[in-house]
Image 1 (tube, rainbow, N blue to C red):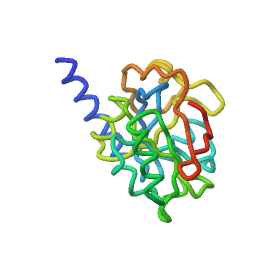
Image 2: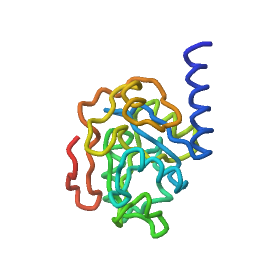
Image 3: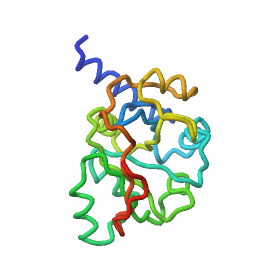
Length: 189
């Protein structure tokens, strides 16, 4: 089996798992991420339990293109749209106003949601294989260092259903998180 065929097979398997409530670890720009279907509350709650993370903190959604996160967030004006469009795809996560029907299990105790259109080829391909945005949070328990390899993801996050082997994007730190309305940086990249 060629490397390309093997990758397609793994992505197809991952998409099936995600559609049936599974949790997948995969490489992102800097670290391994944990992902699941953002509209499956049981999957999200299981992911939060694996991470030992409070639901109140909220989560990040990644996508291969803006249309995949558009159902969850509002772009208040053209200036904000231009600001985020200029940074995507890429290692930039933006806090945008959450649409009223965005589930609490995604936004936590906030009225905003963190979203990113990723340039990482495997993460983007996973979103495309799944057919939409995915929850994306670092593969670790809260307060512990994030996994930077497939092996570390498997060891640090028992209970995940699949680990996709691949190289991270090489960034030293997780992506920057900025408030799209103000431009303020909440986490430096």
